[in-house]
Image 1: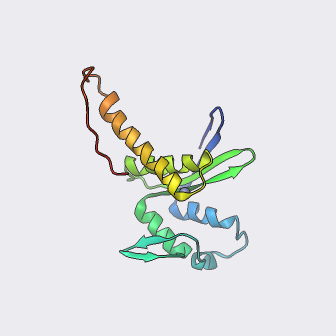
Image 2: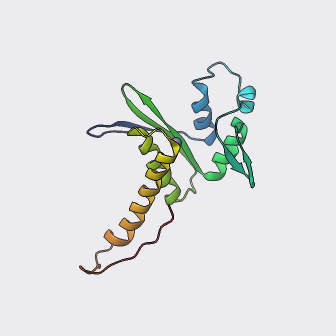
Image 3: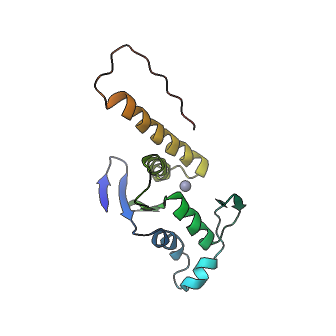
Length: 153
Ligand SMILES: [Zn+2]
């Protein structure tokens, strides 16, 4: 767990051990007493793609499968004391997916509510790190040279 206060953003990251833990945590707030078996069947507002099939209003069970397949997932909780990014990521998760996830949630943390807006933050974060790795980490870049980066956003 990490606690970091930025000038305008009090942010805490809450890491979960399993995908199930973070997904259930997301739905527990609204269904505090629901038994686990019923929570799995609960219909959500998430639209997901599993094995080439799109499920609008996926169940918690379907969402959980998609989260495990993706390898990283979480959500941003807004409280009057600060923002909390709850997350889980698999040990084999790739850096790009994590950065995209973090950028997305940070977009929410600084006040962008819409998923499309948060997605842009995710993409920009991944692109910035990609460029950083290639442009700034190595010290042999020659001043005045130009580098072309092609990124999918
Ligand atoms: Zn989001």
